[in-house]
Amino acid sequence: MTRFPRAFFARVLRSSGLSVVLCAALLVGCGEESEETTTETTETSPPTIAIKSPAEGACVSIGDAPDVRVPFVLEVKALRLRPPGYCGTASACGHLALSMNGKVVGRGSGTVVEFPMIGVADRYDTFDVEIVVVNDAGAPLVGGEGSVLRATRTITTAPSCDAGGGA
Image (cartoon, rainbow, N blue to C red; front, side, top):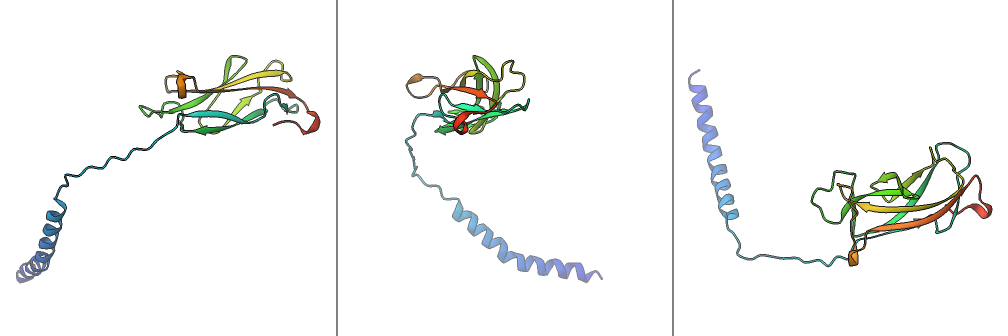
């Protein structure tokens, strides 16, 4: 019985000796450092934001449901949209603040931002909508030429629009 453990460990050490030598050889091969450095530069355009839908001056059919939301579909370029608090020190990163007639009524971090009609006193009216990209602290981000990243749209809401609506 005393012979079994010694024989077992002797066999393990003999068979693992080759493994140890191979691992050491691989580590030595990986230890070489290169003096060369590579720098890759990419040209990026300034960030932009635009509203794709609804069209400027469109009539948007909202019916009579109290909790209807008007979606605004955006086109975003060279910009990372993240929920508030998730950008940290990343450049060209923020979330969207949707304002209706100067008052922030919605926030989002995707290419569709919704304008909630619930709580709007006169739901069937003309609204000036502004969507601004803001950083984690709520300050507007600037794009090319130092201008604030924003998109604006004027829409009219109605229970039903002639000619199929504009949304």
